[in-house]
Amino acid sequence: MPVEFFLHTPMPDDMNERRAICRVARLLDQKFQRSSHHYFLVGNIDPTRKPIAQQQGNMTQLDGLLLGPKFVAILEFKNYFGRIEAGSLQGPWHAVTRSGAQKVIGGARDNPYHQAVNARQVWSTYFQEASDAFLKPARAQALANAWEHLSVLVLFHPYLHAKSKLPAMGQADYWFYPRSLDHVLDLAYSLRSDKLQLTPDERRQLIQQGLQAEPWELISDLLHQLLGYLVVKEPASKRLPVRYPLYKFEDFTIGRSSTVQGHQVGNTGQSILVSSLHAQIETDQKQVRVRDLGSKNGTYVQNKKVDGNGVILQPSQTVYLGEVSDEACQLWFEPIGWYETHAADRSTLRTGTRHIDG
Image (cartoon, rainbow, N blue to C red; front, side, top):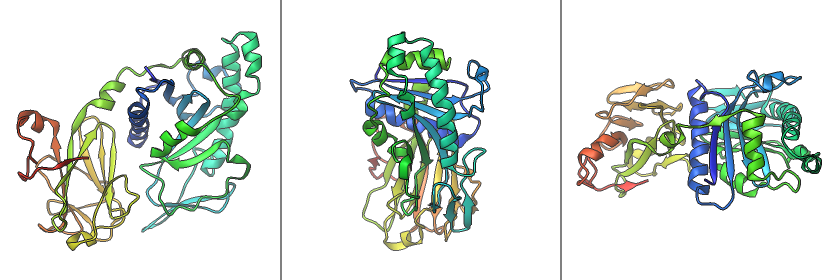
């Protein structure tokens, strides 16, 4: 298969990290499953586990590792909604929201760039030594300086705010890539090193022998099993309700900004009460949660205002954006079981109006 998935340790407890790695896996599967090139994704690399724990030096935890035909890239996930502001690579980074500025850290480091520099240094050494163990001497010699081309992708999810102000990359521009998570496909397609080019077998050996990672057995269920559909209705617009598939460990944002990773609300009628970045829908194994993103006019489930912690959304409940009224932008969740029960009925189950697949 053109995309192979591995886990070094079990999925992280942090739900944001789970959603991020599953999103990357889903995007890679959709884009490259019929590709003639092989890609490999490894999730949740723990430096305290053998054989990495035997390595001398301050090894770091990695959210993921992506290996393509002409690149190898460390993945680090950052969950921020506000615009990112950073005056320099060396100085502090902040996420600026309606409620103020929040410092963007990089693990134990002051910012994502410092985190990336450290990770790249220790892991390039480790990968070279690990690959030397299974490569033939001539091949190992040919790749002697290749790991200097190891890349680091700092992926903001659900997206990197469009008004973010990132620093000039300088000499780091060939290996350090702070991007929106969905840009991982562009990077996977465009990253090129004239030295760090491992064959599919070499990449697989590095993963299975060098990291001792195991195939991600449950990935098919996570990628392809629908929980149901999120339906968005804007009464003031002429658009029919729009239906979006929701999978396990997924996030979906809604607002009036064109940068939302989900549904962009129009500017007519009561929809003007919707903020640029208004609310987020999050899923886990079974449940759907809605939370407010610091909107001006609030998010409501039935008649109760939702805070930043969010609430579990039941299939019978309606979410209102901006105000509780029939004219407000509304959304609701329809479990996949409803569609299996009403398989012959292709109308919107709640309204009787045909809706659109997202």
